[in-house]
Image (tube, rainbow, N blue to C red; front, side, top):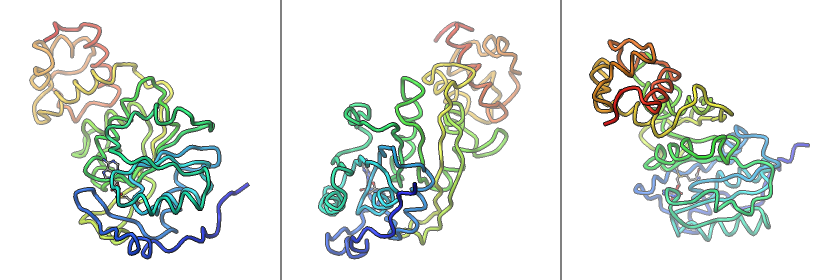
Length: 292
Ligand code: SAM
């Protein structure tokens, strides 16, 4: 059954913003989406929502929150840093009894599993129009979740277009780097929606994209995500240099590590596949080359 509602009988978001005097703060990355048709489209990118608890970071005046609830999300658990937004969000919670919980705080400091302790739905998913200043830090935390498969079943997240392109980038391209490797090793990310600056109030300088992430059950080759982060930091830290040079910040004898994995020491970071990075990380942990 499609649980989507035609309207939520709440005031238009423009009126909500005016009533609660939610003048956008740049420091909090506040670019609001006021068109409920659009927020409902974003919500649908993460469907089905009926048996889901949705984690939302930064609900702001509640445009995406309302979209998620109208599209049938069983429950939304939202974390918002801006105290000014809480009264507006309380009105949405009143409209949907028992379906919206709002926590005031910094999403970077949240212990998600603790926050969701009494969740009783089949699935937890993450859907957010992320504040751009902390978007990659939040994503990296979610991608490095332990244990794996993670506590969330999938994510639909809005980023600046340029960041979205870095997440889905392929080897041999300029956008390919650390973010692509960690994201693609553990999930299958794909861009599902592009939005022009005018979709937001106030409009940001750049376009945005929604990326859908489906976690891989068993990322292969298997390796430690922390080691993978160290290997990619070394390799892409000096991306113009050959690996035999750039990996010196990781190990004094990169050739040993590269030899063990059959990777040419003359390649540059950008030529390696995601799997090859994971192989390097696994070999490093297995002790190929003396530790630093
Ligand atoms: N979801 C709303 C929408 O789509 O219109 C607002 C999205 S706006 C891009 C980002 C939101 O994240 C703002 O409401 C902002 O106050 C909030 N925010 C910024 N930094 C935050 C943080 N560290 N933790 C939680 N929320 C944060």
